[in-house]
Image 1: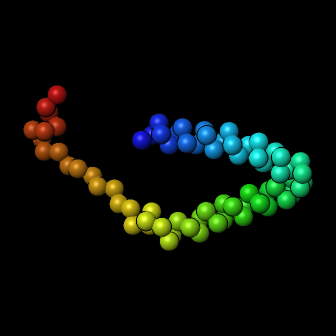
Image 2: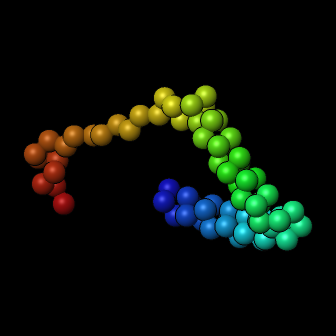
Image 3: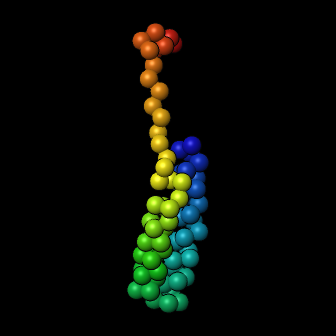
Length: 70
């Protein structure tokens, strides 16, 4: 799971960096930064209404015997 997340993250960097550069060149750096801030704000507003809000991590407790089994 961690490798998949890292791969997706690196993929977004490869796509986002050139797009940000093009936007900064065409529209200006201020506009590019405001667009990035608006995108991050929109992404943070989506999370409370998604299934992410109800996600829980289940921790499995091992008995002493299970913990000692190699």
